[in-house]
Image 1 (cartoon, rainbow, N blue to C red):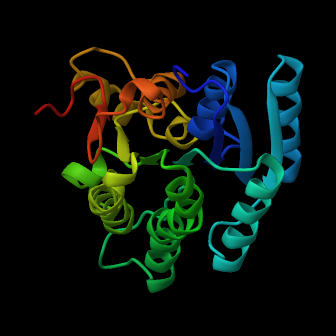
Image 2 (image 1 turned 135 degrees about the vertical axis):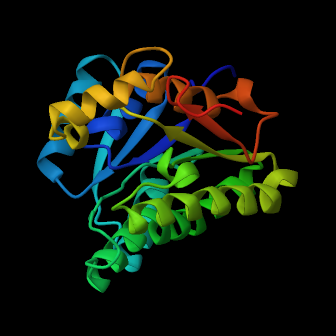
Length: 248
Protein backbone atom coordinates (compact mmCIF):
# COMPACT_ATOMS: atom_id res chain seq x y z
CA UNK A 1 0.00 0.00 0.00
CA UNK A 2 1.57 3.25 -1.13
CA UNK A 3 1.17 6.67 0.39
CA UNK A 4 -1.45 6.89 3.14
CA UNK A 5 -4.34 5.20 1.36
CA UNK A 6 -6.52 3.21 3.74
CA UNK A 7 -4.61 4.36 6.82
CA UNK A 8 -6.39 5.66 9.92
CA UNK A 9 -5.12 9.12 10.87
CA UNK A 10 -5.86 11.13 14.01
CA UNK A 11 -5.21 14.87 13.72
CA UNK A 12 -5.42 17.20 16.72
CA UNK A 13 -6.30 20.84 16.27
CA UNK A 14 -8.11 19.74 13.13
CA UNK A 15 -10.83 22.38 13.21
CA UNK A 16 -8.72 25.17 11.72
CA UNK A 17 -5.38 26.26 10.33
CA UNK A 18 -2.59 23.78 9.74
CA UNK A 19 -4.52 20.93 11.36
CA UNK A 20 -7.46 21.42 9.03
CA UNK A 21 -5.17 21.55 6.00
CA UNK A 22 -3.46 18.33 7.12
CA UNK A 23 -6.77 16.56 7.60
CA UNK A 24 -8.06 17.59 4.19
CA UNK A 25 -4.88 16.55 2.39
CA UNK A 26 -4.64 13.20 4.19
CA UNK A 27 -8.28 12.49 3.36
CA UNK A 28 -7.73 13.52 -0.25
CA UNK A 29 -4.87 11.01 -0.35
CA UNK A 30 -7.08 8.17 0.85
CA UNK A 31 -6.66 8.15 4.62
CA UNK A 32 -9.61 7.84 6.99
CA UNK A 33 -9.68 10.73 9.43
CA UNK A 34 -10.33 11.00 13.14
CA UNK A 35 -10.75 14.73 13.66
CA UNK A 36 -9.96 16.13 17.12
CA UNK A 37 -10.37 19.65 18.48
CA UNK A 38 -12.48 21.48 21.04
CA UNK A 39 -15.12 22.80 18.63
CA UNK A 40 -17.55 20.02 17.73
CA UNK A 41 -19.36 22.31 15.30
CA UNK A 42 -16.22 23.00 13.26
CA UNK A 43 -15.22 19.35 13.35
CA UNK A 44 -18.62 18.28 12.08
CA UNK A 45 -18.36 20.81 9.26
CA UNK A 46 -14.94 19.47 8.29
CA UNK A 47 -16.12 15.85 8.48
CA UNK A 48 -19.05 16.74 6.23
CA UNK A 49 -16.69 18.42 3.75
CA UNK A 50 -14.45 15.35 3.64
CA UNK A 51 -17.42 13.01 3.22
CA UNK A 52 -18.78 15.27 0.49
CA UNK A 53 -15.60 14.65 -1.46
CA UNK A 54 -15.92 10.89 -1.08
CA UNK A 55 -13.68 10.53 1.96
CA UNK A 56 -14.29 9.08 5.41
CA UNK A 57 -14.04 11.12 8.60
CA UNK A 58 -15.49 11.31 12.08
CA UNK A 59 -15.45 14.08 14.68
CA UNK A 60 -14.05 13.37 18.15
CA UNK A 61 -14.31 16.55 20.27
CA UNK A 62 -11.27 16.80 22.52
CA UNK A 63 -9.62 19.27 24.85
CA UNK A 64 -6.00 18.07 24.85
CA UNK A 65 -5.32 19.67 28.24
CA UNK A 66 -7.12 16.81 29.96
CA UNK A 67 -5.41 13.43 30.25
CA UNK A 68 -8.54 11.35 30.73
CA UNK A 69 -10.19 13.02 27.74
CA UNK A 70 -7.19 12.08 25.59
CA UNK A 71 -7.34 8.45 26.69
CA UNK A 72 -11.08 8.31 26.03
CA UNK A 73 -10.79 9.92 22.62
CA UNK A 74 -8.07 7.58 21.39
CA UNK A 75 -10.02 4.59 22.70
CA UNK A 76 -13.10 5.84 20.81
CA UNK A 77 -11.10 6.28 17.60
CA UNK A 78 -9.75 2.73 17.77
CA UNK A 79 -13.23 1.40 18.59
CA UNK A 80 -14.64 3.21 15.55
CA UNK A 81 -11.93 2.40 13.02
CA UNK A 82 -10.37 -0.75 14.46
CA UNK A 83 -6.85 0.65 14.68
CA UNK A 84 -4.77 3.82 14.52
CA UNK A 85 -1.95 4.19 12.00
CA UNK A 86 -1.06 7.89 11.93
CA UNK A 87 -0.98 10.47 14.71
CA UNK A 88 -0.51 14.14 13.88
CA UNK A 89 0.12 16.18 17.04
CA UNK A 90 -0.80 19.62 15.79
CA UNK A 91 -2.88 21.30 18.51
CA UNK A 92 -1.05 24.29 19.96
CA UNK A 93 -1.52 27.67 21.61
CA UNK A 94 0.46 30.82 22.36
CA UNK A 95 0.42 33.03 25.47
CA UNK A 96 3.08 35.57 24.55
CA UNK A 97 4.71 37.83 27.11
CA UNK A 98 8.18 38.99 28.07
CA UNK A 99 9.80 36.70 30.63
CA UNK A 100 9.67 39.32 33.41
CA UNK A 101 5.90 39.64 32.99
CA UNK A 102 4.93 36.10 32.06
CA UNK A 103 2.51 34.55 34.52
CA UNK A 104 2.98 31.00 35.69
CA UNK A 105 -0.46 30.14 34.32
CA UNK A 106 0.62 31.27 30.85
CA UNK A 107 3.67 29.02 31.07
CA UNK A 108 1.67 26.04 32.35
CA UNK A 109 -1.10 26.37 29.73
CA UNK A 110 1.32 26.44 26.80
CA UNK A 111 3.44 23.55 28.09
CA UNK A 112 0.32 21.50 28.82
CA UNK A 113 -1.14 22.01 25.35
CA UNK A 114 1.98 22.03 23.20
CA UNK A 115 4.17 19.44 24.91
CA UNK A 116 2.37 17.39 27.55
CA UNK A 117 -0.59 16.68 25.26
CA UNK A 118 1.56 15.21 22.45
CA UNK A 119 3.29 13.05 25.07
CA UNK A 120 -0.06 11.77 26.37
CA UNK A 121 -1.50 11.28 22.88
CA UNK A 122 1.59 9.33 21.84
CA UNK A 123 1.27 7.14 24.92
CA UNK A 124 -2.39 6.48 24.18
CA UNK A 125 -1.88 5.78 20.47
CA UNK A 126 1.34 3.80 20.49
CA UNK A 127 -0.21 0.54 21.67
CA UNK A 128 -2.20 0.12 18.46
CA UNK A 129 0.87 0.88 16.36
CA UNK A 130 3.08 -1.54 18.31
CA UNK A 131 0.50 -4.29 17.91
CA UNK A 132 0.39 -3.95 14.13
CA UNK A 133 4.10 -3.14 13.82
CA UNK A 134 3.43 -0.04 11.73
CA UNK A 135 2.91 3.57 12.64
CA UNK A 136 3.64 7.19 11.83
CA UNK A 137 3.76 9.97 14.40
CA UNK A 138 4.24 13.52 13.13
CA UNK A 139 4.66 16.36 15.64
CA UNK A 140 4.14 19.96 14.58
CA UNK A 141 6.88 21.98 16.21
CA UNK A 142 8.12 25.44 15.11
CA UNK A 143 11.17 27.33 13.90
CA UNK A 144 10.99 29.08 17.28
CA UNK A 145 11.69 25.76 18.96
CA UNK A 146 14.99 25.83 17.06
CA UNK A 147 16.06 29.48 17.28
CA UNK A 148 13.92 30.90 20.11
CA UNK A 149 11.80 34.03 20.02
CA UNK A 150 11.61 37.02 22.33
CA UNK A 151 8.33 37.10 24.21
CA UNK A 152 7.78 33.39 23.66
CA UNK A 153 9.79 31.66 26.35
CA UNK A 154 6.85 29.33 27.00
CA UNK A 155 6.08 28.61 23.33
CA UNK A 156 9.71 28.20 22.26
CA UNK A 157 10.38 25.90 25.21
CA UNK A 158 7.34 23.76 24.41
CA UNK A 159 8.34 23.41 20.76
CA UNK A 160 11.98 22.68 21.58
CA UNK A 161 10.78 20.06 24.03
CA UNK A 162 8.60 18.55 21.33
CA UNK A 163 11.68 18.08 19.16
CA UNK A 164 13.37 16.23 22.02
CA UNK A 165 10.27 14.09 22.54
CA UNK A 166 10.25 13.28 18.83
CA UNK A 167 13.82 12.01 18.86
CA UNK A 168 13.47 10.05 22.10
CA UNK A 169 10.33 8.21 21.04
CA UNK A 170 11.77 7.62 17.57
CA UNK A 171 14.62 5.66 19.15
CA UNK A 172 12.25 3.68 21.37
CA UNK A 173 9.88 2.42 18.68
CA UNK A 174 12.00 2.20 15.52
CA UNK A 175 12.41 -1.57 15.84
CA UNK A 176 8.62 -1.92 15.48
CA UNK A 177 8.50 -0.10 12.14
CA UNK A 178 7.10 3.05 13.73
CA UNK A 179 8.59 6.37 12.68
CA UNK A 180 8.41 9.57 14.69
CA UNK A 181 9.25 12.88 13.03
CA UNK A 182 8.57 16.58 13.42
CA UNK A 183 7.67 19.36 11.01
CA UNK A 184 8.95 22.82 11.93
CA UNK A 185 7.04 25.58 10.10
CA UNK A 186 8.51 29.03 9.71
CA UNK A 187 6.35 32.06 8.93
CA UNK A 188 3.03 30.58 7.79
CA UNK A 189 -0.06 32.56 6.84
CA UNK A 190 -2.61 31.53 9.47
CA UNK A 191 -5.17 33.22 11.70
CA UNK A 192 -2.44 33.41 14.34
CA UNK A 193 -0.08 35.40 12.09
CA UNK A 194 -2.82 37.49 10.46
CA UNK A 195 -2.98 39.78 13.50
CA UNK A 196 0.72 40.69 13.38
CA UNK A 197 1.58 44.34 12.55
CA UNK A 198 2.20 45.00 8.86
CA UNK A 199 5.72 46.33 9.54
CA UNK A 200 6.66 43.15 11.37
CA UNK A 201 5.34 40.99 8.54
CA UNK A 202 7.34 43.01 6.02
CA UNK A 203 10.55 42.59 8.00
CA UNK A 204 9.94 38.85 8.30
CA UNK A 205 9.38 38.50 4.57
CA UNK A 206 12.71 40.20 3.88
CA UNK A 207 14.45 37.43 5.82
CA UNK A 208 12.85 34.60 3.81
CA UNK A 209 15.03 33.52 0.87
CA UNK A 210 12.00 32.27 -1.07
CA UNK A 211 10.46 35.72 -0.65
CA UNK A 212 7.01 34.66 0.50
CA UNK A 213 5.24 33.36 3.57
CA UNK A 214 4.35 29.70 3.69
CA UNK A 215 0.82 28.38 3.48
CA UNK A 216 -0.98 25.84 5.62
CA UNK A 217 -0.96 23.50 2.63
CA UNK A 218 2.85 23.77 2.41
CA UNK A 219 2.99 22.31 5.90
CA UNK A 220 0.32 19.73 5.15
CA UNK A 221 2.33 18.36 2.22
CA UNK A 222 5.30 17.79 4.53
CA UNK A 223 3.07 16.03 7.04
CA UNK A 224 1.52 13.81 4.40
CA UNK A 225 4.95 12.75 3.17
CA UNK A 226 6.23 11.86 6.64
CA UNK A 227 3.00 9.95 7.32
CA UNK A 228 3.35 7.92 4.13
CA UNK A 229 4.71 4.48 3.32
CA UNK A 230 7.41 6.15 1.23
CA UNK A 231 8.90 7.88 4.29
CA UNK A 232 9.54 4.58 6.04
CA UNK A 233 13.30 5.09 6.35
CA UNK A 234 13.02 8.55 7.91
CA UNK A 235 12.72 8.84 11.68
CA UNK A 236 13.80 11.19 14.45
CA UNK A 237 14.05 14.06 11.98
CA UNK A 238 12.87 17.66 11.93
CA UNK A 239 11.67 18.72 8.49
CA UNK A 240 12.02 22.48 8.18
CA UNK A 241 9.22 24.16 6.22
CA UNK A 242 10.41 27.74 6.46
CA UNK A 243 11.28 29.08 3.01
CA UNK A 244 14.97 28.99 3.84
CA UNK A 245 15.06 31.23 6.94
CA UNK A 246 16.89 28.52 8.84
CA UNK A 247 19.17 26.18 6.94
CA UNK A 248 21.47 23.36 7.99
